Every structure is written in structure tokens, then in C-alpha cells.
Length: 472
Image (cartoon, rainbow, N blue to C red; front, top):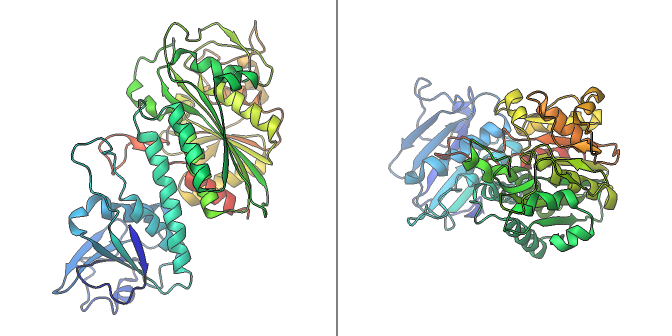
């Protein structure tokens, strides 16, 4: 897909897409169309469209409503390529009136590009490739070239987030994630280091290694570093990278087909790392992804085992299906001890409890810092990737007490599951003062109008971008 900014000659066989604000229809369409449209036919209401054909051109009007937000714009424009492919040949024109703000233009361009994404990776009849599509962008905004370039980087990162979750587990293995990180270090200003199992053992990553023992696919501990000479702060990200989760010997009895999505946290932080480096944001960033497959064989770790951890705490394994917190524990401890970032955030598809609490509307947020909590909440509301706080009260800590070890990985009760999981993680952050844990089990993978089956959402990419840029 190639963008052309305000081209002089781009009229032939081009469909014109015109976003229209409700109650500003006549003002926006003045000069663009040769006739007015009756309000009864099209008034610009949110999620409405109107197709108009003249002798020379085809116009698709996109209703935005009165006060559209970023994610609504993104979704409206994603529909163009996703659902109107028959209208789009080799050229398309996106025609923005001055009333459409630069932020909304960026959201529109991001959404438009996301519409080219398809799940049909392995189909004999491949889905349409929009690589040769020529896109004319008409706008009077002074920074339109910058907006367009930035939108391409955001869309590219989000589609990486989609793909990482959507690929099947025989393809997306811990090694695949490691190779992905190495590739990014070749094309962006990112330094990548990969610990194999031998190196991880030397580093004391005992909990991480225990989870992967039952898999024939070697575990990989992935570290990415992005450094900017004008950095305003250092952010540490840790993402749960369970590429497939059988539950281990506490094997799952339902929904296992969806467990390729159990690395949604890893997808979030990896795609965000790509975007941060691509935009050259003025921060320092360290990202850690403990990547494992939780499988079953003769070497699989056992319920009632006591395992070690990077932090030096012994852990009683109550449930092998509470594996994500084990690899995160080592990731968080390693991050603090070796990098000590100013802010520490982990993303994980961790508990069904968070889904029971919030459904598929938002992620659960836990933090030991009120300012960090508020910043993440605000960024979530602005980006549409909402997170909402739950308590980390000390009364919940005793739920994770073990008779035989320093801590147990599951309280064994059908109550407060997301909270007790967060309290478990808190034990491994070495009292870091600005830590947040985001349980995104209900929002990283789900149903959408853009696919017939559950698919990746890239949840966390937009949230992190907004969170960072609000501090710069």
C-alpha cells in the first residue's frame, strides 16, 4: 500500500472516501459533490455509510457522528477494505475536510490500513493482497505527511500484534518469538539478547524453566533494549509469552483450542516495542518476554512440586495451569535486578477471574502507585483500550501463604483469582515503587466483526503509545 499526499493527478478510476461529521454534512460536502444529499438519506450518524455514483466518480461517505472518538474512527475506516473490497480496485482517495482534526485523520488512516489484515495465512486461495493499492490522501493539514507516516508505523505495529496472536502454535513457538525479536534488532534501533535454557539456568530463572519442562519446544527468555539519547524516563515492560497452554498436568477441560492466545501479553509488549523504536520516542525501553510452551510429557512439572525462582523465593506449585505468573515472576525479578526501570509494567492473559469481573470490555489493572494507576486509566480511556483498577490490599497476601515454601502459585479457591495472582507477582518485584500489572485475559483475543472466529486485538499497543506520549 503506497500513500500519495495531495497528488495533482490521481483521478482515474478512484473511489473517493469522505468522512462526514453529523450536523456538518452540507459544510463538509460543499465543493466535493455536485449535489446535496437529503438528511433523510444520509445525516452523518455514527456507523452509517452512503454510496453515491456520478458519471466519473464513486463516492463513499462515512458517517462519524457528532463527537467521534479515536477507536470508533479506526473501526469505521477498517471496514472500508475489510468489507468493501469489491469497490476498491487499484486506486482509492481519502478526502479529509478541514473540520476533521489531525488526530482523527491519523485514526482514520490507521484503521484504513488495518482493513487489509486477514486471517487467511494458510488458505490455498489467498486473501487479497493490498500491497499494490495506491492511496491518495487529500488534506490541507500542514503536517499531513507526518500524520500519514506515523499512521503507517502504528498500523504496522498493530498488525504485528494481530498476527502474533493469530498464528497457530505449531508456527508461533518460543523460537519464533526469539527470531522475531532478532529481526527487529536488524531493522530498528533495538538490541536483542536471547537466553537459551542453559543460559537461563545459569541466570537462576528456575520458575521460567519449570513451566517449559514438558514441551519439546525449547523455552526462550527474550530481552529487547531500545535507548534514546534524549530519554525522559526508562520504561520496563514484561509480557507473558505462553505460546500454547494445555494447562500442564492440571490439563484444561474446556477452551483449549483458544490457548494459542496465551501469549497476548507478549504480543502487546513486542508490538509496542516495535512501535516505540519505529517512532523514535524519547524514552529508554527494556522489554522482557519469557517465552514457553506449557505442555504435558514425562518431564512436565508436577502439582505439589517446590521450585525455585530468580528472586530466591521457593514456590509451591498448587496448579500447573497457573503457569503464567511463574514465568512473569522471573521476568519481573530479572528486570528489576538488572535494569531497575523508572516504571515497570507487565501485560498478561492471566486469569479467568478478570474476565468474570470485567467481561470483554476492559483489562484489570493493579498498581502500587496512584499516579501510575491514573496515567494508565487515562491512557486507556483515550485510546479505547480500557483498564480499570482492582485492589492490592495486604489482606489478600495471606491467601498465597504456603506451609512448605515461601509462597504458593494458586490459592485453590474460586474467589479473588485476579487479585491473588497480582499479589503473587508483587512478591517478585523487589519492592519496586512504580509497578503495574495488567491482566488482559478478556481483551487480548476475542470476537470481532472483522473475522468469523476469535482473533487477536493488539490490545496494549495503543494504550502504551498514549501512556508514553502523555508523559513526553
